[in-house]
Image (cartoon, rainbow, N blue to C red; front, side):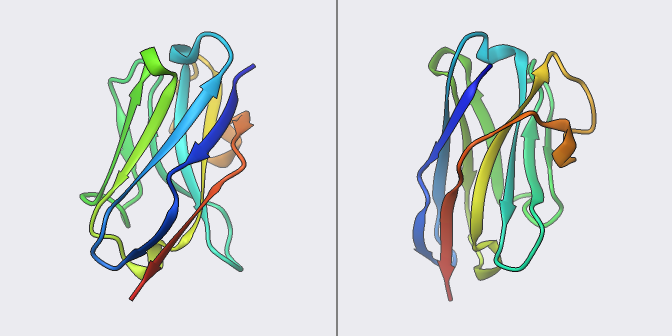
Length: 126
């Protein structure tokens, strides 16, 4: 089973950029669909972005489309989320998640993922 660790969070001003990383340990990283979710205080965890295990498809929440980019480097066992034009409403703890091997689905539901990282805080000041 894969183990996930996020990094790259921090404090940034509105309009700024951050790149989150999610490094996986374990074998066969390339067979997992991967996603990013976020949870703001008092709110449910919500889908942000996902990439299929084949890397051929990416998915984004409407609120981040055009500003965030998800990518993966299978050789480095790392998932990325590049975030541009950040807004105060992007403030949340960001989690990466991995699906079952070779999973194919909508990728937007929390129940489609088996393994979660511990999260990294992103704070956007106005």
